[in-house]
Length: 102
Image (tube, rainbow, N blue to C red; front, side):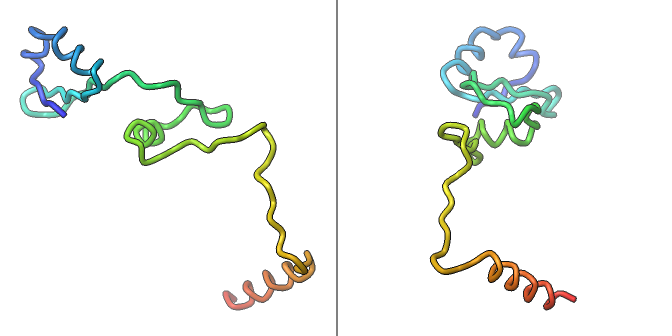
């Protein structure tokens, strides 16, 4: 990651744009204060369920510590039932867990 002042960036813009195109992030400062980032072009990032992604989500995708969920064919994830465990048993277990919190 490189840091460049606004005045130098203005004079050498094409050089820094080439660096960003090559995958490097350039931090732009104005009088020692960070004011912007020139980042590499991003691959298509899908929007989240009909809403635009937040800046936090976009940053996570860009930096690689957040990955969007993958849906195979639009169907829900496969269920893995516990053999011999019924809905009634599950609900009873949930009720017992809730009793501990009261």
